[in-house]
Structure formats: C-alpha cells, structure tokens
Length: 71
Image 1 (cartoon, rainbow, N blue to C red):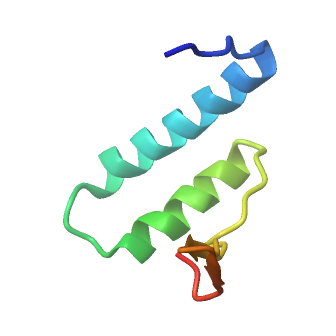
Image 2 (tube, rainbow, N blue to C red):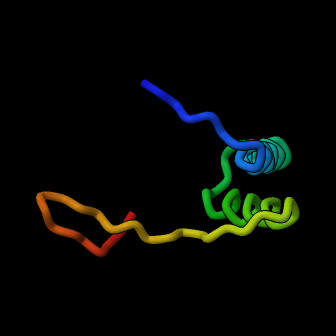
C-alpha cells in the first residue's frame, strides 16, 4: 500500500485533532455518552482554531441505489 506524504499544514491540523481528542479523553475518562465527548471535542477543536461540522449525513450506496438515511 502506498501513502502520500502530508504537507506541513496537514501535519499541523492532524496534530491539533489528535491533541484535542487526547485531552478530552484524559479529562473526561471512559464511560460517558458519545454526545458528551463529541461536544467537548468540538469545543476543543474551536479553541485550537479549527472549523468542523457535526453529525454530517453520508448517503449509503448499496446495490446501485442511494439511500438518504445516511450514517
């Protein structure tokens, strides 16, 4: 498998995302509802200067048919 090398900008963004996820996990610990982690993670991303979208629907394509229920 071949991978593309990330640009410095992409590396910086990835670092902020990983840092945000790690910080939220360490501060809250395990066992909470996904929604709690999501809102705290998004808050941390904002503090890092990153934009995001929450719970974006992705259509399901199966057997040549597009289902709009999304994931």
